[in-house]
Image (tube, rainbow, N blue to C red; front, side, top):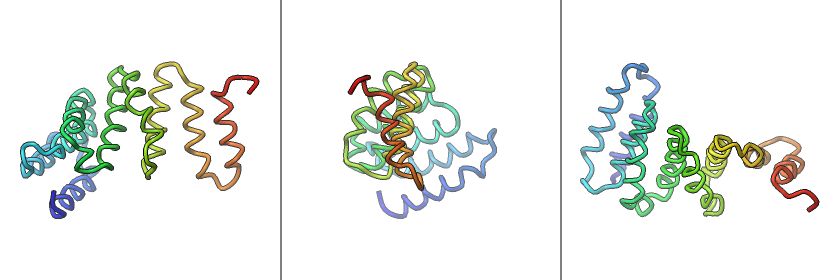
Length: 170
C-alpha cells in the first residue's frame, strides 16, 4: 500500500490509547474504514482488522483474521508484518486455550532471520510454553531474551537460561 495509507494507519494506532475501553467499536470502525481503502484481496486488511479485534480484547475474532492475512500472502507484502502476525496469532491462540498451536507457530521463528521482533517471539513463546506447564522452557527463553539487554551478567544469565533446559550431566 502507499505511504499515505501506512501513515494514516500508524496514526490511528498511535491514537489507540485515547479510546475509552467501552469505545472499542469506534476504534475498530476507524481501522475498518482504512481497510476499506485497500484492494479486496490485500492481506493487509485482515491483518489490521485482526490487530484491532485483538487489541480490543477479542482474541477469538482475531485468530481467523490473522490466519487469513498469513494465508493471503502477508509475508510477500511485508515480512515484518507477517512476523508480527505470527507473534500476535500465537498470543491469541494462547488466550483462547490453544497454546500448543502457538508453540508450533512460533518455534520456527526462533531460527528465522533475526530482527527487532526476536525478543517478542521469545516472550510470547515463553507464555505459550508456560500455559502448557513447560515453565522451565519458558523461563529459559525469557532469560535468554533478557540477557543481552542487561548492563552486566549477560554471560551468566545466558548460561543459566541454557542450563534450565539442558539435560543434566552435559
